[in-house]
Image (cartoon, rainbow, N blue to C red):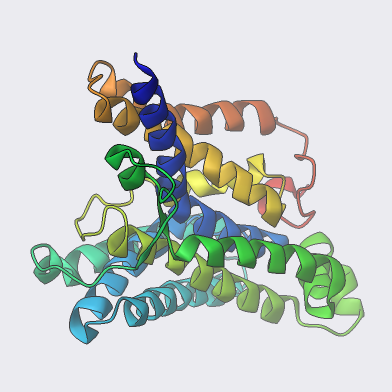
Length: 307
């Protein structure tokens, strides 16, 4: 390859990491917050798809991308709130409820989103990171989703909140010891419902980035399992919001290898490279989830770590 092709390839992977990694970032941050409270939300795939459809519909009807983002985040929060309320009932399993709500969310999105497959909606503005280059491929590749800086700021805010604020301490306490939380007079269910709802709101921003930036349209196969992959990504990040940023970029870069190669005229193995994020997910689960032992950093009250 020529020097220009190498530059275009690297720019394509970096730009792709930022574009493809945006949904991973928001969904993993939302799940990180949820799991810190001691609850697992496997319904994030449904949250992601429903919020993607709602964001696109909101932007289309209001002619405003940012109002669409808000609608998508609220839709994600609503489905996550339902998950939190159901899981607060006696003898209700988090995992089974999450799977049921994943099906509900995707089903609602497919049904309500049928009229939105053809129309075009306003898009989230892009921040040009390739202004320094005269190469049109580099300029095109380095277009940053305006939601990404918000996601990074949210990661820092969550990290700081868990470490330094009363609310963050209560969420962590509910996730580590329900008994201690009750002994201090706090409602474990209330804390988990609040954390799950807030996590769904954050994950909804990821859905909005799918339909309002990249790929920038609504269709029924838009998420490609990113909501489920984000659960493994949180394990990989060891329940740290800051590590979620790096993990999201890693997964985004892995998903961008195929399109980056295709952009410089290398088409062989395109579909094979598209499987890299899923292979990474399997590798992470194999090496981090061992029977009889909890992953480092795992909240003690998670269903998967209870004895």
